[in-house]
Image 1 (cartoon, rainbow, N blue to C red):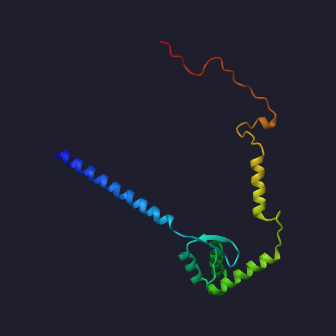
Image 2: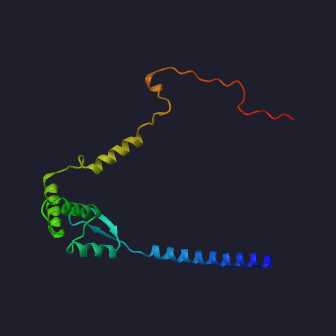
Image 3: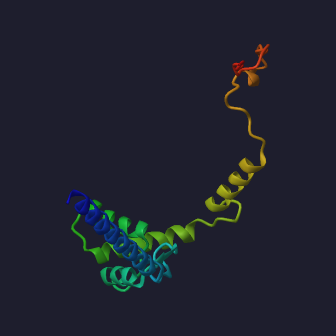
Length: 159
């Protein structure tokens, strides 16, 4: 009787495993079928990939305008930090005005743009030889003694 119970449990667990595999494969199909769209922030110009449902929710909150996550947080902060009580619409207008003025006042050429600077920095770090970090005395010109091994590190097995 005990053997039958164990056998039934094993059979039931096999069924559960099979069911979870089916569930996971069907959920993988759902994940792979999610469509995303590229959308550009109406405030800063940043482009993000988002689902149409998320895009719709953000546009409903911000009078039909799309805002990236950073600008959404900036608008929320504007509402909180304002000395007088302002609406989200007023905070949004202030933020968009700020972004426009900032972009028009700062003319960056390609060499000054932060993204290009980071690219140059990355290329330089990849092209330069890497110093040994563990040998800090080597950079100071200090001679170090080397250990000389007289025998094998492995013990011999003699039969």
